[in-house]
Length: 340
Ligand code: FO1
Image (tube, rainbow, N blue to C red):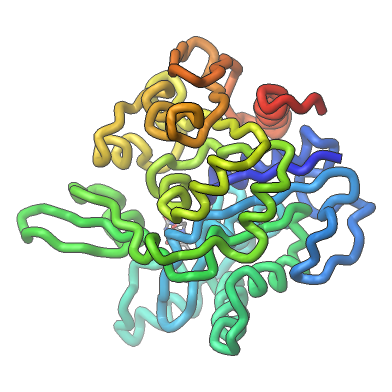
């Protein structure tokens, strides 16, 4: 039995987790047949043979119409639980948008956020539980008793730690939530800074530090290094946990052939002054022996990268289907010293 922890964003991270489950002999979607009935905060193995915990970015989380939305947690939960809309990569399959249209009928702000009718139930349950005092980690585990993703989904933190962007354009300097920049403005406004509001005081959610400390391998999914992985590394105790775990920490480059595979990573990297190259992202994360968090780094075949203190391997990194993603996950586990 191996214990694997994955730091994950939304769409890309969820796609990687499907492949990791397959690499460990688990059905990519849903629970394994042998999954024991688990209590929300149960720390026993979530899959019988192997134990996968995903530490998921909560920097995208946002209050919309009084509801707490957790885009990356919901994307992972729906994708691994079989409820996601495959084409969009987020939100629910067979979705409708009646409530969104009715809200627009009232001129209710925001009108730019895609609030689906089926998705709404998740936000209503989550918001009610949060108001009753349950931490996000317990809310997430409770939602997962329905979706049964076959991995433990852990919010990076139960505290408020939202990513906001500082925009400088003709209207001068202003700040907005990452989701508004991302969705309303299509990430087209020039950003001078990403700010993880609350990161300094945020504590890892229940189970996060233990999972990282007890892991046999820790993987950084090929998620956005700035607003997904970076938002989690901004939480001091998460960075400390990664630097002190006995597991090897292996990252998979989200940059292939000098291009980001998803979601504006080029723009985000340029904002923080990191070149859009596999090696530059690894240097940004840093080798653990040099004060960073990585022990190994997978780059796409042909994207040679030499980073002092890091073991770098070249493997195909295009998540074209579950088999290709499973091969990536196997290569990452192998670099972590786990033969699965
Ligand atoms: N992405 C969009 O591009 N447009 C949307 O209207 C939108 C709504 C939305 C609602 C719930 C949810 O869980 C995700 C949603 N996303 C939407 C995706 C989300 O904004 C991004 O996938 C991540 O935040 C990017 O990391």
